[in-house]
Image 1 (cartoon, rainbow, N blue to C red):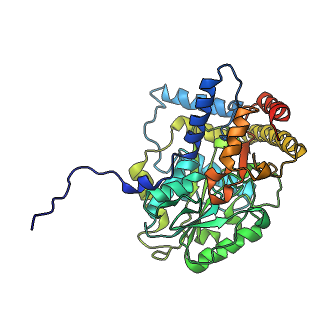
Image 2: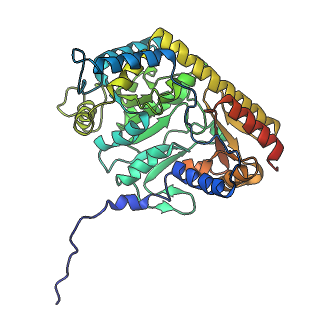
Image 3: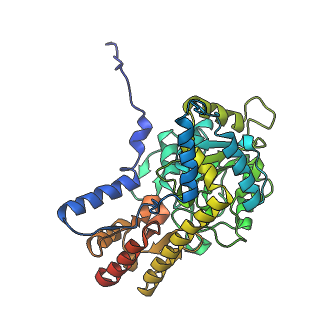
Length: 421
């Protein structure tokens, strides 16, 4: 019997081959670039990707300049900073949580990073690959894609049911775009509030149901609060830690990107409570979620830019927060203009009130990507197809208020004049 030869050599991670098509936003860029190449001189108005448009505020710039000046002087120059992030920044964040969210967070529980997207993907690396993952559906793609690439799913179903092995928690009009707790056991639960893409904000009662579920199942909630500063209704929670028991079961991830304009600066944070409990750890053990995340960050990451962190401290001052509120008000006025436009045209519109995103139903039951092409070809406006956020996103599209007012007004006028309904 002939010996069976085994191929040798470097091999790629096979789980990456499961990822359906390309990442959503590069796919959008590819289609828009193809359209632009064939329509030279056509003005394309981009209301798809949630990238901020207004410049950094004066206080942030002032603090960043001071950070640069320190690096330019031998007496004040610093190299690597604190492993968890600038101590002063973490102290200010802890104060910020108390002043604006009325919750206690220890500075030792705060880990500064280069953004919420990175943390949302990286955080799952401290958990067992056999953990069952549940996600809001629709959801920001990084939650699903990074878990697929790590081996926590089967293949992608072409009939839009999603990845096998991932538990999708449907968010639709009937449940106010916030899901019920899973009927089966899951281990990791991704929640985003205000939700990207739907704009829905979870209530205390809704979050409590998930906290109660997680504590009973020894599951961990990964709570993305990157858009929490856009919540104008003060009765709605801006942090999961306002829910009793959340410190035992939830990790909160947030960012300076969307409320302080740091999308290109890159600065965020994650909070891993020392009280967090998992099935195989409890507070005081040698290995906990807190200690493992600390180990992961200090091993794989050398910290965010000291200049960016100086800007973060500026953003958290009273003056910086006031200036950032001005940015938020500007984008929320954009959202109102867009919401009014689509509603006048007869669209069913959600979001855009406590969130900079609108979640809009496609007309005549059109598929999301078909309507994306229609919007690009007729009014030349870029939106985001809802199906790119998960199975429950089919039949919807997301509109971003992150644009200059002149582009918002031009987009509205073009939609009114050129969109054929």
